[in-house]
Length: 142
Image (tube, rainbow, N blue to C red; front, side, top):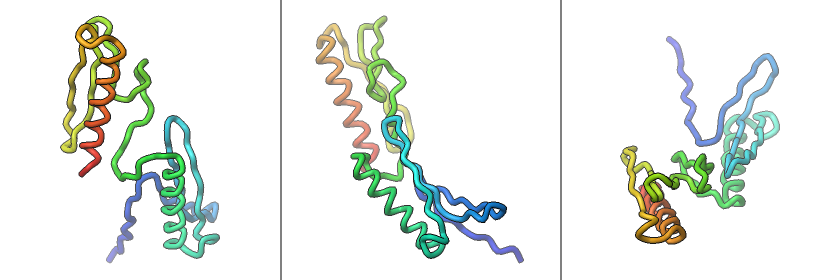
């Protein structure tokens, strides 16, 4: 009978077992605003597989706290591909508005827009950013 080994998943932490290189441990990679912070926790140096996992978890949590990154096991996008520099907020010059998008707790896409004509460019951008921040907080609350 084959015995299966269950490995619990931890966000930003991967198990590395390379027998040919005699490398066994946990690799942590924290990404925040386009920068990556990483560290490897060897089973041999940390006193075993479980101890190295605990060290990896502690380092990840400490690093995220130092960076000001919210500790959650949910995926969070921190790099924006829009010219506004804000994730989920983009300028639609053709329609003269800021468009806001987000994903709700159920994984469904949500969208709205804020008129530049009605609010002015600066105020419309502020409102769009506020909406995005509120929707992201709602998603992460559960």
